Length: 272
Length: 263
Image (cartoon, rainbow over all chains, first blue to last red):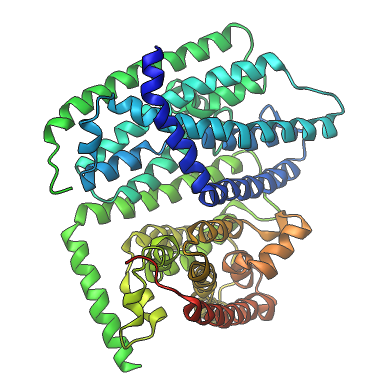
């Protein structure tokens, strides 16, 4: 264990350093996400006004605000750029440098990202949760922060990240076949945003579709942790949801390994 | 002028050749943008299953605004996509030198260099939505509304391009300004829905500071209401022209501040 930490710690450090160096880009993405949340906030406000009621399909406006901002933040937290990184490395041949090192390829990518995730947790998620709780206090007049839900949210987010990492890894392997990674990236993001419920809460979808999506791995990526934080799941359902996340994490681990074993045989580095 | 047009055609032809080479890539790009759009529309659809009207507009009318807002966006994406690269890496890597040593206007060269066919996804969705929404959106269709709106569309696209020129120019001082382009460009989200849903400060911001409100809502207002073309159409033309002039001034100032990085 000690040996492993020693081996992979430099990757995590490199992740933190690159986030610090590219902090302006990072800020750009954070602010971009916030702008999007605000557009959605006003849109939902108009929807609630047009609807005339206090509740919209089981969500109050306060719920909606928490959902919007927290699911956006959670998506940013668990965001994995491994599809781009591995795609680039496959294309320019640098992946060979990674393959000849005495480290596990997946783990080396993962530890680089763990560094950035820790940073994001401190500079993004905690301030956001604090802000949202202050907002909720101002609107409702009571402190609604629940430490247990918060801890469950964090543990659910861990699985959410593992799933996000594996899904992105599988997407990254597409680089073996197509060159327009950028287009694929847009495609992946919009599909994931929709299926994971970060665009529209899955609870608003027609019943059949909702059930289907709730069991797919995408829901595990931001919907499950956010719903847990909001206390929308109770008792055993929380365990069931986290168990489902764990199951998907294992399945996707297997899938990405399978694709990798097939793809690595096709790898052909020109120059580099 | 004729020389510029000839150069543009030559460069565009080069682009199309590259496209034929990587057909799968072109398809992925266009399909990606198409699906991205489809999901945005699904979102509006789901909202409208619950409410009859949003800020006083019916479902077809909202679709019309959304659709019209995508056309200027698509046009800019089609013609001026290379500005992103200026902000993200062309200046940083020192590759901008090549635009300065050729006997054509550098800005023209940058823009002419790429012809981004991925934008077809946005254009198809935009036009498709307009056609779909037209019969039921209770539009005021006559020669004037249609003609003036069509004329205003390129000007609305110019708002996108000008904002990109301004933000890309910052790279001349900062070496890399991709994140600023990203941030400002991202505000086009505001253009998809009626500006009236936003609070006053936001409304002022998207009307007068980063005027994306003109690329969607105000642009469609004349054909939706049949009144006040001076504000909606006139506003688009005036704002875009002013913004374009400002962007040229900043760009030129940036050019004189440019120092080659790299080797």
